[in-house]
Amino acid sequence: MTKSNKNNPYLTAVIIFVIIINLTFLYYIKYQNQNLSLNEFNLSSFGNLLNLFLAVSLIIGIVILVLKRNVNSNYKSFYIFFILNQISILLIFGSKNTTLPFGNIYLLGQSGDKLLIGSLFTFYAFTYLVMIFLVWLDIIKTKNILIIRAMFNSALSMLFILLFVFLFIIGKESGFKKISITNEKNNIGVVLGAAVWKGNIPSPSLAGRVDKAISLFDQNKISKIFLTGSNAPGEMAESEVAYNYIKAKNINTKEIFIEKETTSTNEQIRYIKNNLLTEKYNVIVISDAYHLVRILEIAKFHNIKIQVAASELSQSFEKALYNKIREALALTVFWFFAI
Image (cartoon, rainbow, N blue to C red; front, side, top):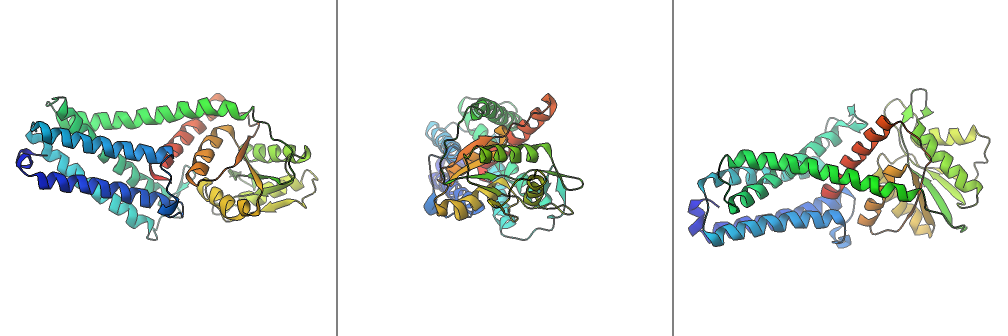
């Protein structure tokens, strides 16, 4: 990659080999994040294809530079980011397999542990994109302030990806309102947990999801209701709050069940896969329309088939915008890293 590397094909081969190992290791971490083995690897998952595309783009760029033998000395910057990228993925692996001390710190509804790991993944993605831009900007003979251009383009690319995912969610969510659920006696509804307000009152999002489940139950479109969701410190479990909300409506709770251990959408999909699909139920996941997009992507990653039903949640423009931006960020992170 540098001038000296022009005559050292072994170093180039090592770099390409490490990139391939890096990709394989990233896939391993993604499946570990979901408590899956690589035996369940699915290349058709959009996130897996995205990871492969980035790795192939980097490798092809390196090969072109070597074949052109037209490398400028600024490429010592490549090695800096190459090393930082390897360090970041090792830190990610270590943090995922170590008990971190920030679990009781919450910001934007996420624990400190998750925020730290998310920051490490973001840094990994940024350094990877910088390497790609360093290579391809050199190919097109961009030599002035190369490192600055590469970093700027990387940050811009991350924002562009986020915008793409935001528009992807908007384009998909309207279709969920038109989905009709056919009456089958083995249909069950799974309500995903949402925020609980002070005094153990269900937030509008949680209430809207439960109301949708009640509506489907009354129409005999589902025969059972499973309420999911754990609790933040000092709160009742989301599923218990949802259960009490149903009881307050004087509805028979004989076919309503509670799950109190899951703390995230990922964990709730795993719960469905490991506990409900094994019973040969037709699972209808009930949540807000903007949330269902990520739910289906996670289900696809797990190679399971579920149906979805959107709540009738109505929000102000500002609140809806905030939730969609937050969901776009969550889906982007899932596609890249399965967290």
